[in-house]
Amino acid sequence: DTGVSQNPRHKITKRGQNVTFRCDPISEHNRLYWYRQTLGQGPEFLTYFQNEAQLEKSRLLSDRFSAERPKGSFSTLEIQRTEQGDSAMYLCASIELQGVGYTFGSGTRLTVV
Amino acid sequence: LAKTTQPISMDSYEGQEVNITCSHNNIATNDYITWYQQFPSQGPRFIIQGYKTKVTNEVASLFIPADRKSSTLSLPRVSLSDTAVYYCLVGPFSGGYNKLIFGAGTRLAVHP
Image 1 (cartoon, rainbow over the protein chains, first blue to last red):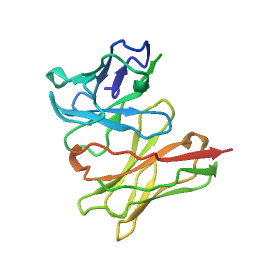
Image 2: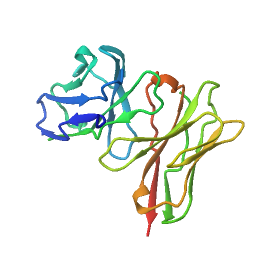
Image 3: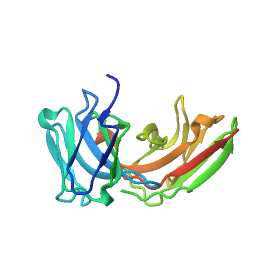
């Protein structure tokens, strides 16, 4: 296992379009997290899953955002009707139930033009 | 989760020891202290976690005084590749139960 994989690495989209990002966590990790990071700021929590169950969503996650983790494996984050304010790095992290440190992916950089 | 305060930026030179201090006055009894490192265009990377006294691994040392209201990340003999943002986080992280709350971090610049 080579770590947490995120695809695509970069995405440029026009305002109003829908985009979907994928995260493949480390296979034995039960918990999967999504974060958003803007320039000069630390990552902000969006949502997390334990296996296939979405256990918490941040208020940052508006109705235009939806995340899934079918079968408790990979996860997708979809943004509908993108806005320029959605431009950010979207990070995925995973950890096993008794783990100490989270493993982050390299992120997907979204630019909305 | 306890709020943390750390310097916005620090400068150092290759070969020096760097100490980054984090204040967390409201740390709770079951809170751990965790540090992450982030390079540009990459996700944060776990460095070290501790509860009290001193923890050392192959990358860094973490010093935590008895009152646990602060902690110091120590990077021995830094190199240019240690230039990164360092985040201090405090919370009941044992078992991967909680989400991470990041501040703005400390931007460390290592110069030749």
